[in-house]
Length: 148
Image (cartoon, rainbow, N blue to C red; front, side, top):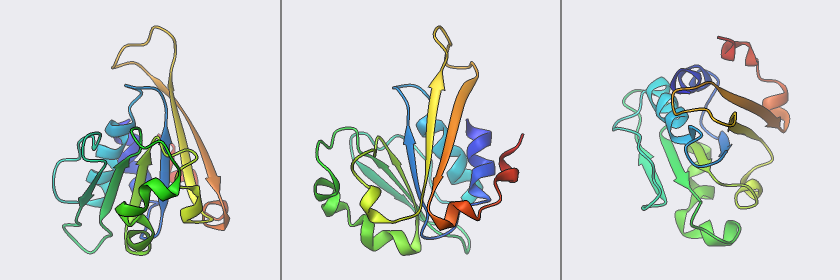
């Protein structure tokens, strides 16, 4: 998952919204860790479960990474309003775990990743990732960089 995150980072730019879904332990934060490495951001990318959101500034000229865990938020975008994601989005890459039904209104363009483990898989086993690009931004993106 981490390597996929590094490769995915090559496609990302300021203004991109990435939504991650999958059961607990599927690899959402591990993928985001790889994104952070690929984007060249400062600080270790860890699960923002208890702080809801973490901002990782860029060490270079790239965009900062805003990593959000919406698991504990019950409502839609209104519950997330205090996070000011609409303000951060134009200048940042925003990754939202558990964001279905909560952040879609932020932008017409988003990349949705669903991570699944086969029954019986352990933490180190293969994951199945489904990518769905929504909007013009992702219809025009060259996804070949993701091929391993």
